[in-house]
Image (cartoon, helix red, strand yellow):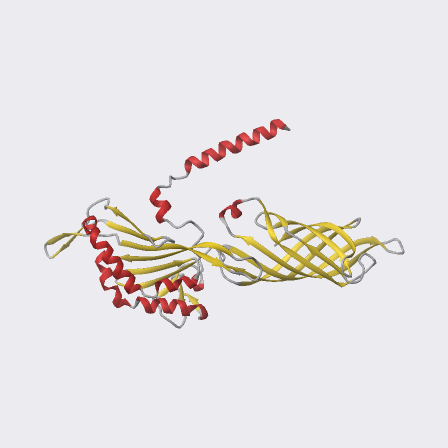
Length: 376
């Protein structure tokens, strides 16, 4: 057995080294100017005409307030860039400017120039001129500490990020964007959360009755695919087996779930009808099935972090409460209740092991047990 464990550890260490060697290096600039994966939960794009676009990405929609006066933001940016104009003289290079404001209000600027692989030209009426093919990118981003309050949990702080990107044919186009109605587009996005979104023939989502220049490449109302952010109503189906005294009791559950998801933490409330099946001999000696039904309320809290996504084993914060609503046989006392506490979880919550307590009439006849549940 020790040899097998040692061999497994050796294989895992080799695999881990190989994976680490394949990962690209992260520069200091990446650490400063790139936003960590998984934080941006909402994304909207606005077509500004002539190929220019504006993209807004947020942790939370209320951070749109930071962009209510984009005209002023652009004006300050252009003033700051005046001192760096000598770094931007190459008209044919594609430029990316990162303009990051940290939680202390400090500004950090990073300029990247990408020279074209080859030369492109425009020949018109005998006149030859160099042709620029790639757009310039200006990214305003920032972070700040936000205090989260909850009725179920103690207040805690989290880091929020936001990013506003302009994709323009030339940096000089920024001077004329104030006439594109940028502030009005922000107001339209804020109001869009109560509006209906429809999917167009280009697979993007647009407001049905609203500014048609605003769209989302992901889901309606700008939710980013894969985060599952937002509130939702879903059906719940589970199959369980638990021990009760000297019985092993299978059960199925059908119900509805109401989820609250901010992209970092998901909370789910569930209400389920749960028939439990006992198999025992009746007075005639024949094997008979006895069905006892519980009405079960559940609460679960899932941390939506990268570490949680890749772990094969984790713990789910939550509890369940069941009340016996249909009794057959002498297995349960009248008014039997069952409570369960935090569950050990496998496969991202698909398989859960939950310690439970059965009791009646306020903790009389307490019986402990374990409940193994598979969620579909």
